[in-house]
Image (cartoon, rainbow, N blue to C red; front, side, top):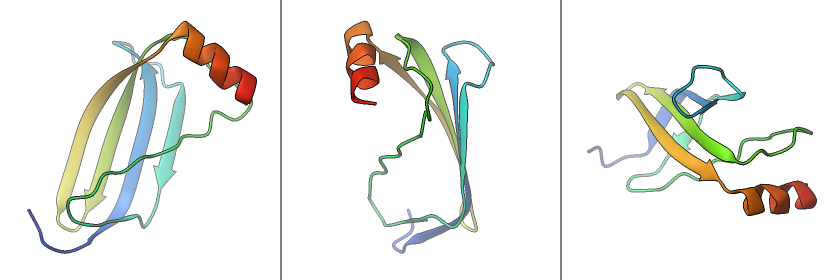
Amino acid sequence: PVATTLPTKDVTVKITPKNKKEVLKEQQLKEVTFAPNSTWNNQLDWEKEEFKAGDYTAHIKIKSEYGDWKWDQDFTIAGTKAKELNKKA
């Protein structure tokens, strides 16, 4: 734990189908800062592509002068949610 803001050099988010290596979307952010004990809600632009129901994994990497972090987060887009998102988009 570090009681200071965390200046980062690079944040990378890749979305793949669960248990597969094919990258569907990728986002790279520069010079992002995190406050201590904060949560981060990231929005990834799907552009004009349709949301598809299924199981996915977000692969997240954060590099900073204090160290590097890497983790994977599985998530599911249900069929009804995909339809709702596509209608709003």
